[in-house]
Length: 398
Image (cartoon, rainbow, N blue to C red):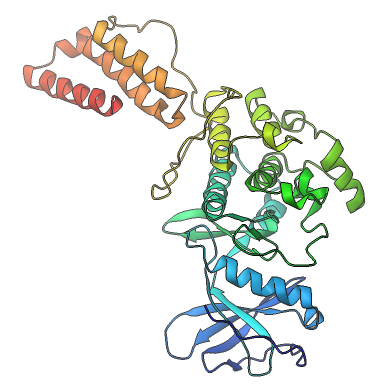
């Protein structure tokens, strides 16, 4: 992507008026939002259907070389990422007046921070689904050698897409770090949001910042979603940074009711030393789901479990029973093959918590198989039940 250079002699206008056309391509429709670094406008393409979001550097930063460099960096880094949970940057250019702008997909939703303001906390099911989607986005960025460095609820947008509520889009790679891109020459100050900043980032140890730093931020987000409180908070930012580096946050179960397994997962993600965190963000997200589903803790030498990005996240009812009863079934007794099947499924259940449903169906099939009531039915009905049980066994063992 060839990018023109911004002309610092021209300030960014006070506000782009509706009808303004940028480089003969994007017609401004209206302003959407304003942040500390820029303003975002809705725009229509002059030759193609659809609407887009145009981000313009804030006029107060128009003559700031560092801000201009970061604005360009955001465009260059984000344009290399193609993932459903990362906002798409479509274009970057300089207007006829000399100020830079970038063009993104238009997102119709609201920030995760606004969702928290409205509800205070999220249900475990909603929190886990959101954390998993953020983890997928971060994992894709990390695979490209990109570390976000400013992950927080304000930089996560929730949409309604493909019939799914709370579809995640991760935004704002303005201070991200790419292994393949030279660092800014003056990139020596601490950048980020203290409440969600990893200790190595808070200490300004930029050579130690990596994917594990984003995992710390994701664990801080999970903590906030589940408890309604940030893990580190104080009256001023310096005090927050001190807590991030030196203080342990209260266990989530001290704020809201949840099991020790959830505490263990979140506090491991918030470990001060990167080596004590999970192998990657995917492993953290999987461990959090497993903690809620089974209450099982994750061993220290665990490995990352794959998340198939093309598969939609299953809807999980965390209020459902988390284990099968250990008492013998009321009718009949399972035979050797059925017992072997149940043991095999149970051995795999710690790797894939969502297969609890398969275990339940297998047990129900075993009870049906040996029920005297079922045996009194006609031969045809019995053969149908047998075929169904065989299909369940085949699905569970593959």
